[in-house]
Length: 425
Image (cartoon, rainbow, N blue to C red; front, side, top):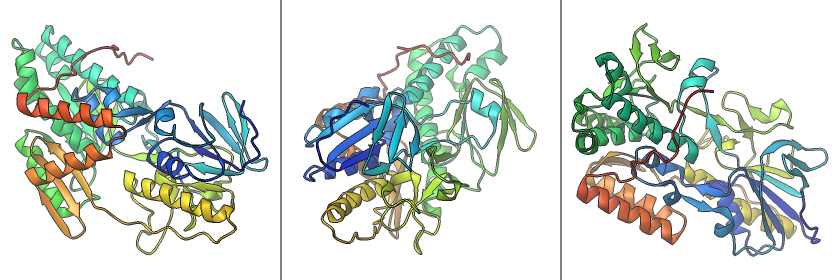
């Protein structure tokens, strides 16, 4: 890899998600060379991906160029590359555009969709972990409605208008609510000759409630909101198979759908080159100590979703959401400052700022320490927090005006098939 040797310690960061960006920004005043590697040239604000997939926002509203985010750093370099493995003995990152040595390495690769070994579902399901995948869902949804408007048989029409979302976490709940609002407010105007009431939205969850990481009160409130919107909830239900048309449930029931979206789980996006002992196999996350160092590798760190830091408070590791990644990135930057100054690093301590999920217009749930509430206030807080967390003033303005427009007009303006989707491999 063509990078200059400037005689300074080189910190290589793999991944420009919440953790990697947080760390890189905090290294601004440190006298080191910072290299960020990512397979995309932009940072994605993943909590709003579902709004891209349901025509509420365009992708450039929630994505921001990595080079622009980090342009204020001294001795900063970005490389668009896919990391193939880590040569831990040589302290070298192996990528598709060349190799790069490091003094310190930080892995912030996040997660990828977990299909739990089901190859048929993996082949035919629609995941939603990236901007291209969100655009695929948007295109598929709109294409299927166009086909439904021209369908000859009732069976074909219903299959094209049947939306099945697997996974009752925040992503699944938010997607279901957004589809329900399209059914209620948007599609009846677009498809006047189509009985939009035939559109069905099904949400499947293997546990006995949705939003299981949140409080029971928030879960019950979210269930109430979903039912009010007409979403069909299937709790304690496992989806066993999907062949592109037929979805098989754990109770033997078969449902036909052309819209099958998988949000049922994630697994760590680990890299090759480490001994198997460094990973918690069940979740595919690196075991790290209180300083985010990967076990047995003092020069290699992991932060965010890929890091498994067990403690008395979090025996199963920190939740795989944005805040732990952001806080670990900022804390590690301070520890690099101490490390390079010959001082002792300080252990990481996570401050839980609460959790939230939106179900639709004026409907959201918030857990804030021991306080849990839902409704318009929760929805307003959800919007404010997400708006402020977006990267870039332009993105904040665009998202704000989109939300204001959608709220006033009961509309979602980004209903464009700009890149037709085909599931043919």
